[in-house]
Image (cartoon, rainbow, N blue to C red):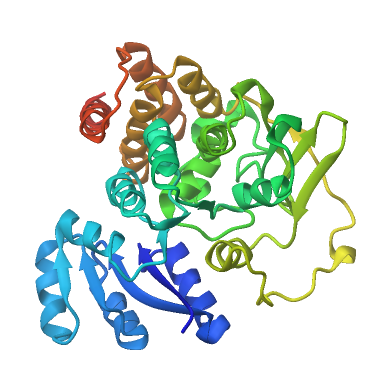
Length: 379
């Protein structure tokens, strides 16, 4: 049998693509546990196809409905059910792809159970980076990034001495508003912001791409994943998204990882690591990309990127606070309660009011997260 994997968030875009990888690789991977938030129709279809040993649904009422449909597979409900999937004894690798702060505790518990993590949830490291790093070290667990930018850096650093790193260069598409003049941003609506030039993603991450907050979150991730100071992490706008990120070394050499802008290769790399297996995409056609462009990231136009940098500079509870407040403000924008530019202006106001703490336990982080959400709902 192949490597046994659990998937948190199997009905989301990352989870669905991961199951495409499972299908492609045949017996290399075996799905033993699945979880979803509410989409029990798709989860039922997945369960009938992959026959996992355990299923969880965050919504307890829907978990009960699904259990009736799948009487031969245990279906657990609520956060405790999701944690049970995360820590399932058969898991050799857990794909953590639950959106937002809800993915933090199940991922922490899986690390404590000694299960290797394929991490597709930015918020786990943004909100709980120090705690995650401590537990990963304590339990000798592998933390393999799934984001295309972070798998690129991970691969560029393979076999290299970390002390030889001079700079990490995170590439960004620039989002749908890259060429929109600053004075026109006030008019941008939800449909405009959801029109990403390269990727089809979930709504929240697509909006974060439009504000460049996604790159700010990735910058914080890079700091914790690779022990690189903030001053050595730079965001570079690269509209084609062919070069997924780069590492510059002290001797002036720059190593990049490149390929088509598609999430299937980074997901497959994380799930099969350290093996490389034939992928699903066609051979890269260099002639299709005669020009690769690079531009500096505009922290004035994209204020959220600046605020992400500021949150890490402030340290302590600020990244957790910022992440939670941003999540609520993005949700309010998607509900058309606030404008696009208000995501950053309101976030900055909230951050200026935050009294920084030094949380060292999950419960303390949870309190910061909840407080930030409440404030962001009412500003």
